[in-house]
Image (cartoon, rainbow, N blue to C red; front, top):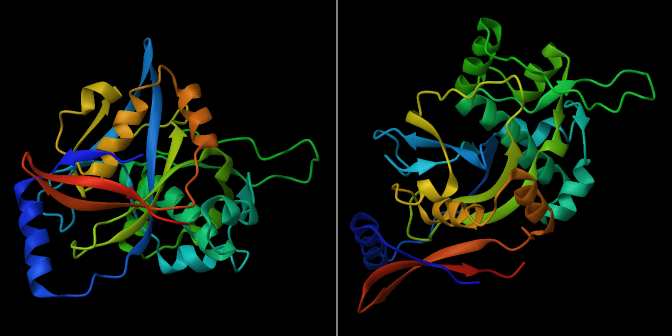
Length: 283
């Protein structure tokens, strides 16, 4: 279904400059974004970051934690280096419409970026030899100094996700991520992403805390967030979330949604002004 959002003046200028230049669109980089949810009285809240004004992409815009797939995300699971609980990479390959190693990399990137950007870790102890141990445990408090040092090392790329998890005896909890959408950045943007959006429940015992890429973070009810500055994928997601009354409903919808075909945003000029319009691409 097509959706339309007013386009800010700076984005219209960028689109016109790109069209006049005759340049070739930048190849999108694979990315992962996590929409973190927690219960609230009578409803639920979503964790949103305001990106720092110094950021090259979407400065001062509200967004969800996320970022590009790292080369070590792409190779770690293929090499068997990342312990894994939940749906295996082959399942994710079918769900995300990607080769198996690339699908595993996207899931690993979602876990890593969430930990880097807000200190929330979707991982649990590696399952033991007991057949009754299905790896359903989840690490709780990850706010101590050692966890923070690991988080900072991941941000600097001094440490890879596989190495970090192995040293802590942890495995990725892929079952805690539910695919929601897949977005392609507009062709006129210099920084372009093929971004998979996931929804996830905030782990009990953990505390969200933003890093230097954001100058503010808030837990917001979806309807209350719609007046804030944000790009269409974020606004569209908040609009869909606002239709639900609790987290279980959101997760159930996510389980039924298809993310095989990306959504591309294009600029459309009408007598009412410029709008960003979402267009579903073919899988």
